[in-house]
Amino acid sequence: MFFVKFYNREVLKNFLLPVLFLLMLVGCALSGTAGKAGSPEEGMIVGKAYSHGVKNDYLAGLHIRNEYVSGCSDCHGKSVDVDDSETELNKSCRNCHGTYDEFKAKIKQEQKGHKGPVKVSGHEGHLIDVSCTACHSGHSGSFPYCNYCHSFDMKIPFAKAKTPYVPENLSYYYDKEPNRVETADVLVIGSGGSGLMAAGVAANAGKKVIIVEKMPVIGGSSILSTGGMNAAGTKIQHEKGVMNDSPEIMVKDTLAIGKTNDVALVRILAERSNEALEWFINAGANLTLNPKVKTGGTTVPRSHYTETGAIGQYMIPILLKELRKTGNDVRTNSKAVMLKTDADGRVTGALIYGKHSGLYEVKVGATIIATGSYANNQALVTQYNPQLKDIITTAQPGSHGDGVVMAEKIGAKAINMENVQIHPNAAAGTSIMVTQNMRIGGGILVNKSGKRFMDDLAPRNKMGEEILRQEGQSVFLIYDDNVAKLRKKVHEGYIHLNFVTTASTPEEMAKKLGLPVDAFVSTMKNYALFYKNQKDTDFNRPTISEPLTNGNLYAIEVIPGIGGTLGGVAVNTKMQVLDENNQPIKGLYASGEVVGGWHGEDRYGGNAVAGNLVFGRLSAESAMESLGK
Ligand code: ADP
Image (cartoon, rainbow, N blue to C red):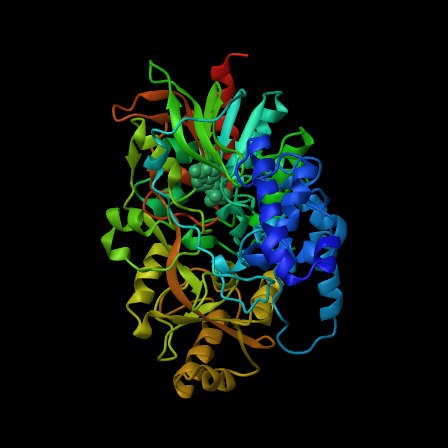
C-alpha cells in the first residue's frame, strides 16, 4: 500500500504500473505460469497489480486496496497455484470471515423472532459443505450459486453476470494432450449419492480412489431429493406394524409403475434395499416411516424418511463423512471429459479437466460413472423426446448427461433415452421440486376451477400429463397443518422461500388463489367426507389419511417439470456397462441415474435414493472384484 499512498496518479500511470506489469510478466515467465505466480514473492507483485485498473474491480483487488491482506499468499497460502477444489483459498476465507456454519448460526440468530417472510441468504441454504468460492470469485465476477436454480434477490459483492452451467461439447477435448498422469485403483466420476457410495465402499476396502465432481459443490441432484428411501421387509416397517412387505412385493410395485423396467436390476434393488437401509442407519441415519402412507399408488408403506428435513440433504453428508473417514475427498471443479481405452478396448480411466490444473489423465483399473441425469441438457432431452422442448427441470445445473456421451463415444449402448420423468410438483416460477410427500401425507391437487381432477396419488408421469391438460397447465397443491407437521422442516423451507399461500378457511384460500369460492369450498367439504367414509367416490384415491380440516390451509401452485431422466447406459447385473452387443466393456461400471432401464417408464418415488445406496455399493464391489485383489 506504500506505493499507492506515496505516488500521485500520474507517476502511477506513467511509471509504476508499467514497471509492475513488466515485473509481473517476468514473474510469470520465471514460474512458468501464464497469469499466475508460482511463489508468494511473485504473488506480491501480481497482487499489487490487482489493486489497479480492471483487476481492481474484483474481490482480490478490494482486499489488496483496503489492506485486508498484504499479498497473494494471505489468501493463496504457500503456493499461489490453486488446487482445483480451491481448498487453501477457502481455508483463508474462513480464517478471516468465519465458517459457513458460523454464518448460518449468525443468520438464524438474526432471524429469531422476525415476523413475515425472512430474507433468503446463500449462507444458510440447503446445500452442504459449500465452498466460499462457489459464489465469490477473487479475480472475476461473483455470482450466487443459488441463482443457477432460484431467482433470489441476493446481494453479492462484485456481482457480474456469469454464464450458467451449460452442457459442453466434449469433442473439444478429444485431440488434446493431458499435462500429467495420475494413477489409482478406482476412478469415480460424480459425487451424487451413487458416486459417494461407490467411492466410500472402494476406499473403505483399502483401494486408492479418485473421485471427481465437475461442479463446485458436492451432492448432485441427490442432495435435492425430498422424498424418502424405499426398502422392503425392514425393522422400521416391523416396528410400525407393517409386516406384509417383501422384496417380491417391492419388485411388483416398481414394475406396476415403471412397466418396462429391467427386471433383473429391480430385483437386485429390492433384495438389497434392506441391507442398504441397515448400512445407512449404522452410518448415522435416523429414519422413520408412516404406516398409513403408500407412495405412488403402491401396495405397502415402505418409504423411509427423516423428520429433520429432506432425505437427500440428510444422505449426502452421511456418505461424505463415511468417505472422508477413509482419508479421501471429492475433487470439485474437476470434470471428466473423455474415457480412455487401451488397444483391447478396456477402459483405463479418463481425461479430467481441472479448473486450475488443466487437462490430466487418471489411469485406473476400474472406472465408475456416476454422473447422474441429462435433465439439464435440453438438446439431449429433445433429441429423444421433442415434445419436452422448453419444459423446466428441477435437476441440479450440471445434469448434462456427460456420462452417457462419454460412454457412447467408446461404444457403450444407451437405452430408454426418450424416457424422462415428468414430476408433477415443481413450484411454479421456481425450479424447486415440492416433495410428493405433501400429497402422499394427505394433500390434494385442485385445478383453476377449484376442483380435484384425478387421484392425487397416481404415478408421477401420469399426473404430469394430466396437469398439462388443466387450465393454465398448473394446479394448486393443498394441504393443512396436520400434513405440514409430517414434513415440518420441509414445509418451513417452502414458507421461507415465499411460495406458499396460507389461509385459515377454504373461503379465504379460494379468494386468495382467485378460485371460484363455492366450487373450492365444496371440493374441501367433499374431501372431508371421503376421509370420514374412507372412500373417494370421485377418483378412487387409495389412501385418505387426512380430512384437511386441521389448522391452517396451505397452497402451492405446481407445474410439471423434468424431475429426472430414466434413460442411460445399459448395464448388466454387475453394473458393468454394456456395448451394442450387450457385452461388458472391461473396466467400466456405472451407478445411479446415469444407468438406463431400472426405472422403466416412470420412477417409483423413493427408489432413486435406494438405488444410490444399492447400486453404488454393487458397482464398487464389482469394480473391486475385477481388480482381483
Ligand atoms: P446420482 O443420483 O446418480 O448419484 P446425481 O445427479 O446426484 O446422480 O450426481 C451426479 C453427479 O455427477 C453430479 O454432482 C454431477 O455434477 C456430476 N457430474 C456429471 N457429469 C460429470 C463429469 N463429466 N465429471 C465429473 N462430474 C460429473
